[in-house]
Image (cartoon, rainbow, N blue to C red):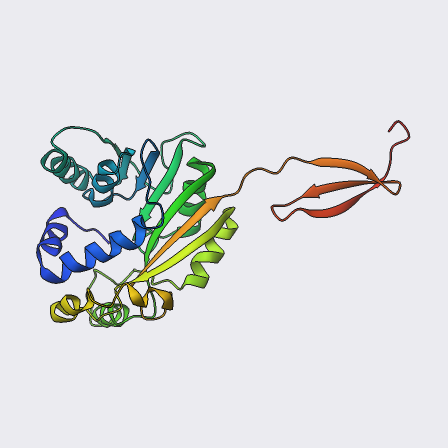
Length: 262
């Protein structure tokens, strides 16, 4: 789905967009409140909403996007919002981010996996550039929501905007992250109201309380996951066998007879 900066700006200026964007950001950043001094990557940064907020919170931020027009718009928003150039903007694809392994303390990816053809590859690459013990903040479109119904209906009626989009469940996302050696630590839902401005206005009173429902009814799913630390191999002698501790849960496996030199 090829989105230009103009619809993003128009969305934020609307009452529905303004409220929805605020609730989504709160769901994401509330899970990692202290960003000061962290090296942060926003993969698929669009026109810079989450990059600018992370920079405001004291992070050292890199914004990555495959669209030149989006990066230009993001840089313009950076200057108007922050008053100075603080962000490193990079042109590239999330499927192959141009960064070395373990480059970032925190990676943010908002409504990225719903639009790419190979989400598993993308998550693997985001995990690769994340330091062991580092955090991934993921924000995705929920499957069980009124918004998903509306968007799917538009796709069935011929709209190209949402035809290729994937709507996620929390279980699917958890499985994807687990395969990439990322442990989910918290999940928050947001935007439980239908896509109507009046509902959004009223939602500010109750939407945060509904986050306990998780993914059911939420148009937006926010997850915090931590990259597993490498587990050193520990060999010890127990009852005439080598025992090897492997895996992030510390499972024990016999490794055969003890060598005579041991």
